[in-house]
Length: 193
Image (tube, rainbow, N blue to C red; front, side, top):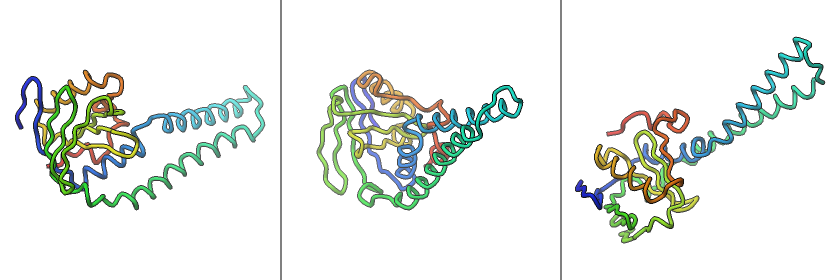
């Protein structure tokens, strides 16, 4: 994998574990708001129940029950959604075991090869967001399309280059989740070689 001060050139092939990790990240970890909302509502329900039992506050039982039902409903929805994701997570046959060659520069990402015989230049202005997680970089073109760069193809210097160029070119659209335990799922904690 050649690295210069101006470009990173590498080949990458996505396997089913990479695909599953990225899909799970999209559904459960990309946005932190649902988890925070659930945690706050559960803590609030618990605090209100304790205050009510200690007779500090006299609340109707329905307040506690509504918060508890809301929390259980959100949790249930996430569990049902997780089940649906597990069913639909069967890897997209086009992206699995499909080799591409990438050239990453300050102009953008140039992608060639693969089953579709791609020759595509993605300028940084069309990249909507990017994330770094334990074993990959996820580059989003829009809500439905993304590119997964497993770090095993980049090596240490390549990952450093990718991180730096994403920070420089995307600014706040890039989020490093390598130190955020909630942004890294179990599939990504295991180094896939």
